[in-house]
Length: 279
Image (tube, rainbow, N blue to C red; front, side):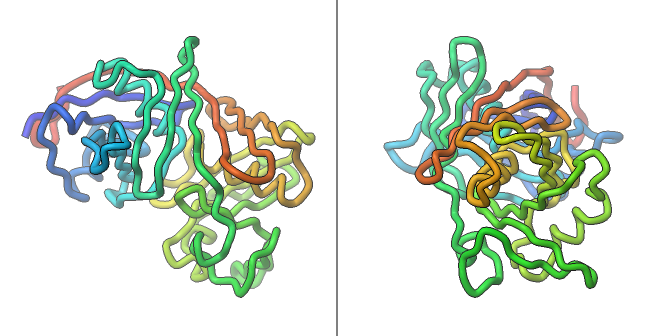
């Protein structure tokens, strides 16, 4: 199997993008994990696969695989790269792109300046929809982590997120606490762990320990989840600048309805891969 691929990133959250519309693609977990290696492969946080849609009202199917080979429901930074990829590769000529994902439908809009706005859909806040083990919906939930009770927001943006408000994001114990939250028994499908510092009502700083990946330079769904949690708790206004290690996203949510995310997407290089060797 010899595949053409493109390496892209959204604020440093990097992706291997494969066109499954014009070429035949067969993937397995061990193969993806090998390609994801930054020492022996291409190196990426996630692999994005472009496929034909299963429904006539969508333009594409968008699939996301973590660096460990597991398939996940959604990725906001990946969605922006997906939009730029299909437009730049002339798989579509309309800057408004409708895609289906395992986490639900998305609408992507490539702006004239190259920024991409993604309609991320409605946040899911009921515990059983996240999924999260809690008897009823709350703005914050107690989470016992190794004997310490943390108070987290729990939000699904098509994938599950736990949001922890911290005093200083730079000194937050992301490396040690992130994997403990990710694998907590109260999240049956594991969870992305976000560490949020509220600067003021329109600005936050955020670090995210992603499920199946580890800490990344940016996480679009994590930014959306953090802002939704902040608005629900009364800490934030409807339009928020989210500063991530890799750069800035603008998240808008009026307190109900769909979340809108705007940010950049960049192409790094193209190549071919065959039997685990890239060229």
